[in-house]
Image (cartoon, rainbow, N blue to C red):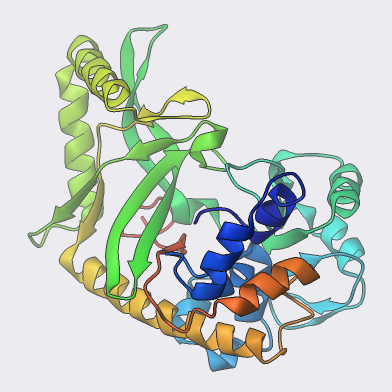
Length: 329
């Protein structure tokens, strides 16, 4: 089931959801409800604060500094004490991001360096509630260049895009990936696109391979490039490859990974799965009640169907760079 528990309980005020509740009690839903309270972004605070010593180094390394956002004390990315998180956020606005803990598609996100008037956006987040503040990941770590057309000038150039990498994980380990590209944020619902993936099987460095691919695409010339791009877009629409804003952008230049990267991602997936088990144990033991915001009805449903590592699909957008980013060039 893909509904969040708060959505399910809201539906239950208008519709009969007793059959779903019974399915939860019998433990026959594919994605166990007992893990859902731990799926919100606010839980990243657990991974980057006092419980990080109980989790794998992999998980901590690939999780940005995060704090649940409200009037409170906290610790900063360096572990130093913050007396007033709200005031600290306004002061360090350029290097931070505010986002809904249960949000999706990039909606409601305030990126510090892009948006002036921090007091206004901070107040919006406080009024809405259920927000987190995160350290802005250095943009160069996510940036790669891809050949792109300038339609008005009928020419090609190397465009710098932000990238994003998502892992799909089950009880049997890493199952696949999704690579996105776009602005900040890269969410498809905010105008981002999808990038093909390719495995680099020789000893060529990813950056060199990317440069060669871009060079080849530039040599195609504008007319041929756009013709291929239009054909790809047409096929995508025929296959229903659309989202909230309509057809999804697709890059002709693939995101490159090496076989070593695949091995590292498999290890990351195994570690994350085990860490999720640990987090469930902590939550069911009441140790995360101050961090996991869940209503009494939602909590009751979640406790009826423990996860405990049973088959499920876990999705993780970790902090990954594969050697073609613009930061480490």
